[in-house]
Image (cartoon, rainbow, N blue to C red; front, top):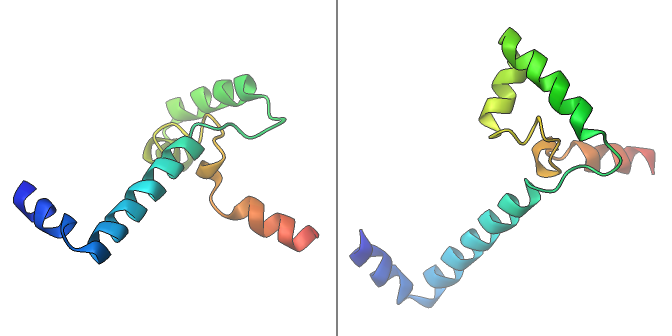
Amino acid sequence: MFKTIRNAWKIPELRRRMLFTLLIIVIFRFGSAIPVPFLNTEALKGLMGEVSKAGTALSYLDMLSGGAFAYAALFAMGPTPYINSSIII
């Protein structure tokens, strides 16, 4: 596996694509740690704690997002805020 990565790294186009992919992953991880502004995260965590005990679809979504949904992370919301702001403006 390391030999394959090393050989791919020697090709400039593949190296650029691998670096771009790593950059996008890093940006997404940082964005998953940024909470939504003006939101009471403690109240949301309490609500998500109650929901997770019930075993609903919302708790499943929180599990798939790695807890970012309960934390109200900016990137956990997906493109919905962008679409809503585009409609309002």
